[in-house]
Length: 100
Image (tube, rainbow, N blue to C red):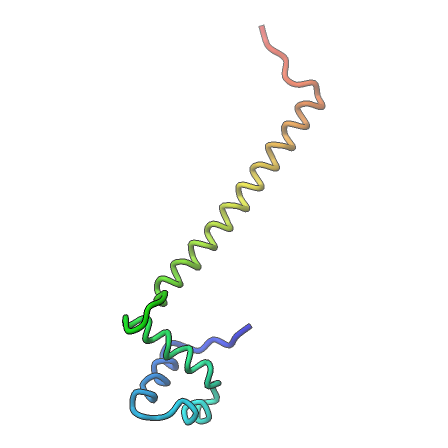
């Protein structure tokens, strides 16, 4: 799993780039891969509206929605399976009889 960096650290890296440091210098100095820094810079451009794409907030909302959909699909599968099991138990007993 990729390593997570705190937002403050990312902000510091992006500020160093804006001050004129190169990606290679920042990467070597802070022990972060150059590709990670490029990814952060690209996401910053998206978040500020300078480049098209999903903003960080939109990505987080989308991930939360996908998690919720997965939860609901699991709940639905459980409910469907339990209904099937209850029907098979009722059918094995001969069903319910009508009361008079």
